Structure formats: C-alpha cells, structure tokens
Amino acid sequence: MFFCRRLADRRVIGWVGFWIMGLAFAVDVCGEDSNRTNVVLVMADDMGWAQTGYYQHPILKTPHLDEMSRHSIRFDRFYAGAPVCSPTRASVLTGRNNDRTGTLSHGYPLRRQEVTIAQLLKKSGYTTGHFGKWHLNGLRGPGVPVLHTDSHHPGHFGFDQWISVTNFFDRDPIMSHRGSFVEYEGDSSEIVVDQALEFIDRQAKSDQPFLAVIWYGTPHSPFRADEADMEGFDDLDEASKNHYGELVAMDRSIGTLRQGLRDAGVADETILWFCSDNGGLPKITPSSTGPLRGNKGTIYEGGLLVPALLEWPNRVDQPHTLMTRSGTFDILPTILDALGMQDSQPDRPMDGISLMPMIDAAVAGEPIPARTKPLNFRHSGRLAVIDGDLKLLTTDIRKGNFELYDLANDLSETNDLFDSRPDDAKRLMEKLIQWNQSVQDSIAGMDYPEGRLLPGDPPSRFWNETPEYQPYIDQWRQRPEYGDWLAKRRSSK
Image 1: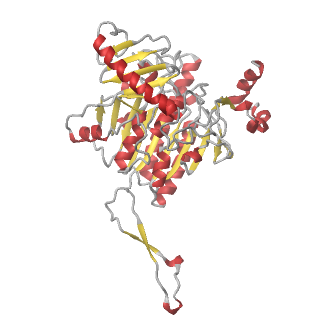
Image 2: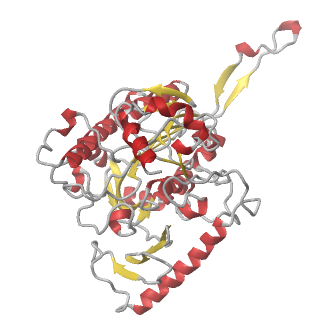
Image 3: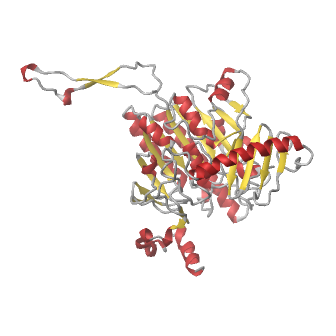
C-alpha cells in the first residue's frame, strides 16, 4: 500500500495490569519517504474537445486549465466511454463498458454488483468522497438532491462522504449531504470544489489518503452564468454566451482546486485527472467540437473525444503530450497500477488498460509503447472499435451498415474507407463481433460471482414520477431549475 500502517504501542501500567488505550501512541513504520498518493478525479458535463485555451479556442480563455496543462500529461486523443453522461460515469468508476454495467444510457443505474474504484480504494485504507453530479441511480430530469433512502446513492458504491445531486445542476443549487438537503448560493462549479476542498483539508490534517470525485454540472444546459463571467461574449447568442460563461467559472474553480491542494500540502502526492463526460453540444457558437464530426449523442469523434489532463508532480515533472488513444475506461486500471493495488475481481472483463507504461515512457523521454487493446464503444444500438488509427463504426447495428475511417489522416471522418480497405474492415468487424458477444454475456450477469443478475436495480424513470419525491414537488415548483420542467412534464401527460 502507498499509505503508512501504524502500530499502536500499548503500555501496561504497574501492577494493575490493564491496557491504557487512551495513552496508546502511533509509531510510523513506513518512514518519511513513503508514497501516500491521493486521487482527485474531475469531470466536466458536456464540455467539448475544442473548448480549452490550450487548443487555441477562438474566444474562450481557460487560464487555469492552460496552466494545469503546462504541468501535466496532456491526452490529446482521450475518449469518453460513451457519447452521453451516465454511461461514461459508469466507465470511470468500473473500467468497463457501460452496457456491461447496466448503465445503458443517460438516467440508467449502475448495478450494485459492479466493483468501483471507490470501493477498491476504500478497502485499501482510503477515505472517499463524491461531490456534484451522480446520475447513476436511475433518475432522469434536472438534478435533485439524492435521498438517503436511495438504493443507489454514492454511499452504496464506496463513497464515505457525498454531497450530490441526481443529474445536472446550475447556480444556487440544492444538494444532498448524505441525504440531508443543503441550499447553496453561487456558481455550481465553485460550490462543489469548495465542498471537496473541505473534505481534502480534513483528510490532509488527519494524514489520511483520499479519493475525491468531483463531477461538475457545467456546461450542461440550461445555461445560467454570472454576468461577469460572460464578459467578452457579447456577440454570441444568449445560450452560447451563458454556456461559455459557465466554462469560465468552471475553469476558475480548477484554479481554486489546484491552489487548495497546494495549501493543504498534498499537491505533490496527488493524482489530479481532468476530463469531460462526452463530446460537446450542438448549436453552440463557436463550435464546441472544432473540426470533429458529430456532437454529444453520436459515436463520431465529436461525440466521444474530450479534453483530458493528468497532473501528478511527484511522478510527472515536465509537461508531455500523449497521442495514444485512451479513454475514461482506462482511469480505474491506471489508478490501481499507479497505487500498486489489485482488482478484487481480476477475472471480470475489463475494457480499459493501465496507461502507466505510456506515462512512464513519456516522463523518461523514451518511445511511447503502442496500445495493443482496441477501444470499444457500445451505446443504444451503435457500436465502434478503434484499433490504432482505424475506426470502424455502425450507427445502427440492426441495419448492419458500417463505416471505416483512418483517424490519423481524417480527423473529421469525411472519407469512408469501408469499401476500399476490405481486409481492414473485415479484421475490425471480427474484433467488434467478438467483443460485442462478451458484452452480451456481461449484460446477462455472467461476469459476477453469482453468475447471474441479482434483483434490486431500479429502472430508468423521472424523479417527479416516484413516490419518494412527491413531498417536495410543490415547493420545488418555485425554483428556476425545476419550475418550467415540472410544468412541461405536467402538460405532456
């Protein structure tokens, strides 16, 4: 383990012969050079691949992400696990494709039988916390506080502390602190970072290793930015102006987080990993995806490629750019490898790999090893496989129409090579079919120790239709984030 075990020296006092536990003191048996690596996983909500200053966005300035990139591994070909939010969140926590975990699309729950990174680190002595958007409990609709009675709240997946909402959230949110409702004022990104830093400060003072998962609600619609954060966007339409204003505030919160880690004295020994949960939104000006084809909800590059940075001062002392294709399903195996930990169920199919060989090679100035395991995607009847620079996809498996692209020479996916490169197409189809069958086995529960699915995972449903939230609906009709949505839901029935 990368945290110190401490032995209690219990002293027997005199003839009484009893242990005085209150006078026990800890003896550090690990020494001052022990590696107590902490982990902070940060994820934006609907931030597109092109929406950073370090990618030369034409109007958006992200000085804090830019500064982070100057001290980080910059993943320039990093993929969300799926083109929408809940499935990607499942891939982060499990290292597995979303369909394996039961999280078929947005608003689908993560199965309780899955093993998460929070559970694995908690068993190894880490204190764990989740802050922000959850969206793995099967509830749809704008984010509301997660109930303490929820069978799929973050605590059931290994999080000791959680201040969470069910889905996207904006300014002045009402959130759930382990089931207790708390109202906050201000920008949502800054709020969750402030709450996470309180957690981090406590763990730093107690000399306890920690995992903090910070999942923003920004820049998901509806867009509500502070007036000051929209300066410089006057020529944009109202939606785009607020959208980019939210990203300004989110970037500022990244700066607050990085400074907070330094102030707590734990920045050097902390892995800070930032990414987005899917590709950027359509109808945003300037484009959220730059030259990429498609947007959120598609399996083209615009729906899957996202910005990603990994900062770890103790291991990464110079900035490096990795063009290796990687994704959110690689986060769990990479973290376990970095911490020297083992998966509790090593025989279950894992879609991600450890990126530590690539990271270590980049730091050492050595040739970057090639990725040998393809990246696979499956969402709502759509499939894709990326092997090296070749990408095979189908937008509807029932129709059986496939497309093949050479991403190294065709980032915008405009030149379909399926007919002109039949050998490559056949090879990738065989790989995709084999992988897809393994996912079918996972969906049936064959991965789990029980060899089957256990009951208890809820269906996807809207929170306003559940009996548990009925007592709050009348009060929440007055809140801007719920009022219009509840009225539309009522009128649609």
